Image (cartoon, rainbow, N blue to C red; front, side, top):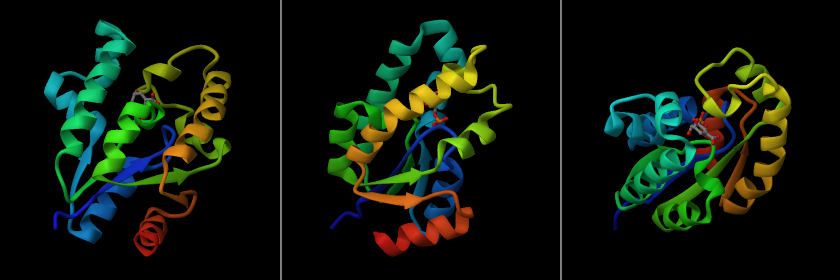
Length: 167
Ligand code: S3P
């Protein structure tokens, strides 16, 4: 039987890419970062896509990427921070594997994202307030989507081991 995918979900800065690539190595799966996948297809960065075509276009590419990757197996997929806030993406990715929420307190992501300029949704003067508002709005959606929730404020290796133990 084909190996199920492992889909990492959570807010920007929760460690999806770092933990995902480590988890892939440990489990012998291939690693795919959804944002990087879209960037490769579009031949430009997520920031450029937002700037040149707007968020709805990016969400459409994201939806398409989720569908394509869900049709594959044996992958560790790092979703984007918004991917699992859309029920259609949740449904398609859930059918392909298990969704793991990397749970990190808002204070921790706020610190990690303080000097970040690569997240178009946070590129605004009221960055911290916008981030907190988005975090509060999304957390219940992430929780509803997840099959497994892990505390991701520990070291990437520890988080990785915890995921493997709970799969
Ligand atoms: C987004 C998160 C980003 C990226 C895009 C939109 C979001 O991914 O997909 O900027 O809506 O939270 P990361 O969570 O990997 O930063």
